[in-house]
Length: 58
Image 1 (tube, rainbow, N blue to C red):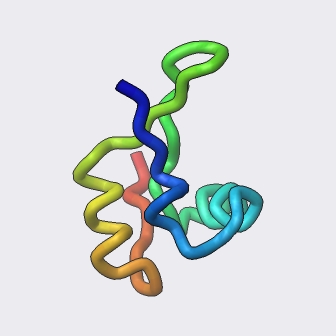
Image 2: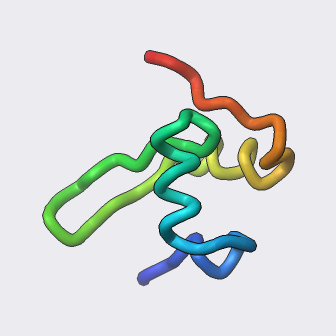
């Protein structure tokens, strides 16, 4: 089963990448060369309030 978060985001892939780099969107977890995942809880927090979301620092 393949799911893409792109269907739920109102902006481009490049904007998403910039938000991740700025800590304003959840960071991806690389599972391999062609597989990237995001923690579901973090995605839900982001989608609930994208303007005020801040990624947690490890």
